[in-house]
Image (tube, rainbow, N blue to C red; front, side, top):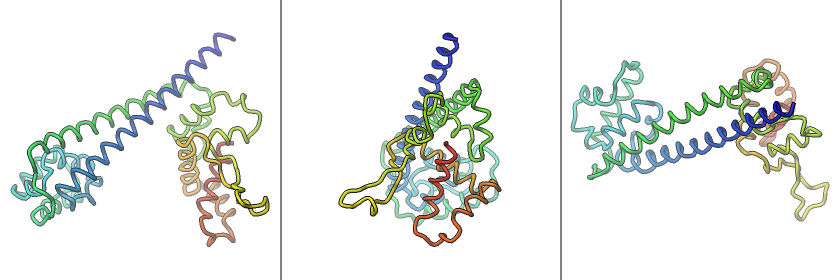
Length: 265
């Protein structure tokens, strides 16, 4: 029995370590994305910002190979298409790329400067590497989660995919260590508190403490949103709680928070 407990504890520590690694990698990914959009695109081809992420791989290729609008405008459309695409694309994506090529001639973006091509290359390749690392980490997390007997049951909850289930497993660990549901909610910062500064108890407005794990709280909120829009039973429950309060300010968010707390319990 002692050996079994040590083994489970080691698996839980491993899961928490991978979840922490994934959070760090996601922050790095966001850093690359912000740098590409707010520095490179905004400076050298601001008109492309609206379509950049919609294009996906091709959007990154434009940044990587032909960032400055002035350089794109100097090439013909077919040369531009060949340079930024390496696979068959849909007609919709081709139309977007052609629009980007057409707009380049009238862009207000700055001309390319020496060294910007290297910076763009490093940013794009760094982003691609981080995304590959995130993908591999997700796969390893899912593989590790399969060793927990609770994991298949979590996946049956509407809105609970592999990501949410892994975060719940990592945060809760052994559920028997909690004495009641309030302690579980506190782990996610979904427990109720009230700001009574300058108010008496009757005037205090209860709100969630937000003192627990923010990533778990966000994941549960997303799970509640998906369940309330995709699952018939949850849709019926959510609608019943809104009935008569539809025009109340912020009520949809409040009910989703309530639903996410109920799902965690």
